[in-house]
Length: 350
Image (cartoon, rainbow, N blue to C red; front, side, top):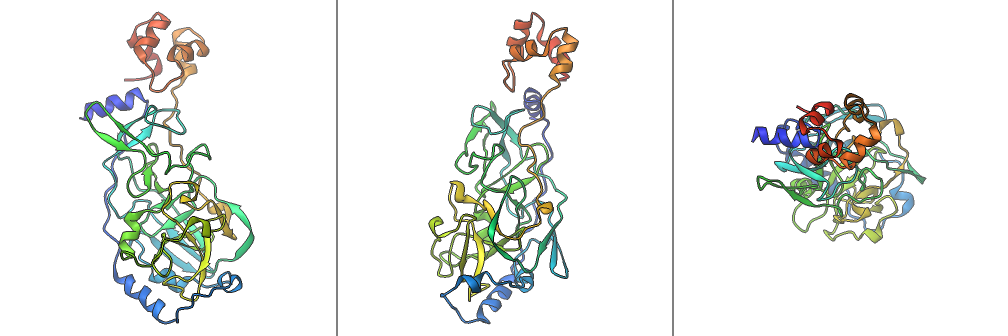
């Protein structure tokens, strides 16, 4: 099997990364703290915009939430520092469908099966403890836009082209060993093959299942970089919040178990369209805290160097490879009038 994966890595010019260790489940002790917060305030289903968008100190609610204990959280003045390692405390798939080298948005014809490459990351986010609502929104770009209680990171709905919705573009591939892998797993997440950065593009049911009861209200499952909390799909009465009720950023002013009088927060409604994740921030956000999205596709080979070794132009080499990854080395070699071994050697493949 090891030799098989090396072959896959070779043909796509990628190398498999180590599988990250699964971490322990969230502590359940904070559930009681959340219930205490809810019980201390009378339920008020009438929420005005002025009340819900008023500056609120989230420190107590943050301390009560069910954060993965691997997340380092430090409180300083009006800022709270989160240092997650990016590895969620729930099961991941053993294998994932990942893009061929150079592919930005893959499908079943431009992806291959790779053993889960998830590995620990080095993240540090300074998030305001008292978010400030702004009528002007800030777009949520590709990359890290929120920290989830599982220890993983939330991305916006889109893949690398900024237009393809990850959840609606899900697919599976099966390799020659009969192993089938999905692009997005059942937790609405996947890792980047190069850096091993696991992230979500929608509501992760693996996370909500740890803090919510069936047909009950959604609790805090994360915090956006502007300081507003992230919730699952249900309202205070356990009813699914329709995406039509959310604003352009997936936000809403309404009561939650932690804020029964109402608060502005983001909702992941469990959809598979562009409303699946946060698309913009309605709170003031420090753009320096946004981490860019790691590339999903593998690195391109040094075609210029390979062409020089072969005594041809890069254009000739690209044409022979048919600009496809992974290439048909044998067909390309025949086109160039050389052996397959010579072509692979020039490209630096083992």
